[in-house]
Length: 76
Image (cartoon, rainbow, N blue to C red; front, side, top):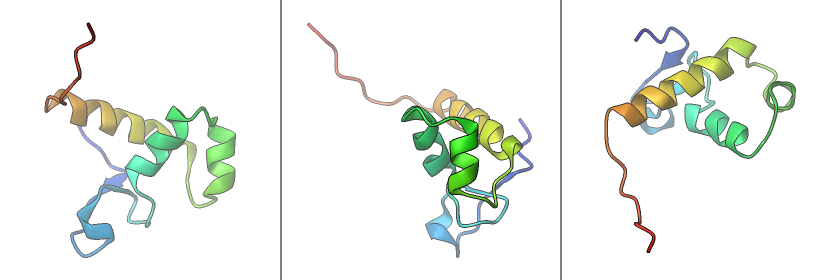
């Protein structure tokens, strides 16, 4: 997959994936969506973001999860 809006700079934000070189981590955007914020609320909170940044953050997160297993607690 090609992610043109996601950047990783090891001297910025400890190398966390960010949006277009901004100090806005992909994880922050994904967490906002998970908490139920809509696109307009996220864009209002971070005026430097564009709608495409949110969509690409979600695609990036989905791809990252495909690449590794996360430990899950089995329910009885």
